[in-house]
Length: 246
Ligand code: BTN
Image 1 (cartoon, rainbow, N blue to C red):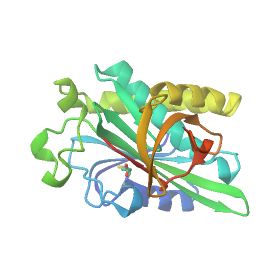
Image 2: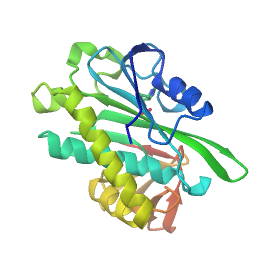
Image 3: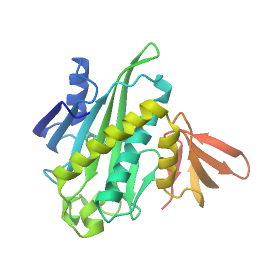
Image 4: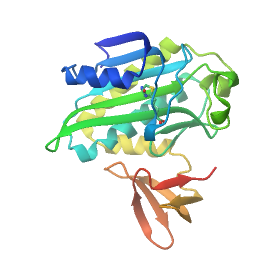
């Protein structure tokens, strides 16, 4: 992983570059990194603020031989990699908010955007997009997201070395991916659950717009969140069906 790194000072979005490279047969593990993105994109058509040298904006091309239905496992894997790097390289205490947000002190410090190209039940490629807020201060975020977004610097009080963090992410990613190829999902699942935001707590959430009390108990093989409620027992929740309260 990362033998082939494409670095841009400015890019519209590293996702776009990755998709194009993948269509042109870029190999598994190709990494695209930009110092800044002018049209960084988040999930659900949201914009991702990616100002110059303030964070890590990168996309990794993966060519796993797993069924398309298991692709969400790679989002979970990516989240555990980011959580491990933050936990081990900084003094912050990261949590993973299902499906793909990295929180520090309940605010979002990183996000993951996984996009898949599949044909006839076979994955052509996956682009794992990573956006990590590293050295922003409050002025760097627009007012509209200031109460929800944070950076590692804001939460730890220290400037971080971006290049070193990138190296660590690639290193951990490779290790974790190799383990995933050899041993499958169980290791990822355990690690993910150990970082899971509000795991095992009785909380108020909204599922398909219904407000209820529930306990998040883990993640399933297809990437779903496992939620236990008094009424329904354990059920699987998929992306877009859940709203968290703060
Ligand atoms: C989210 O939380 O909504 C996902 C954010 C993903 C942002 C990263 S930054 C690198 C890559 N390029 C993009 O345009 N988006 C992803």
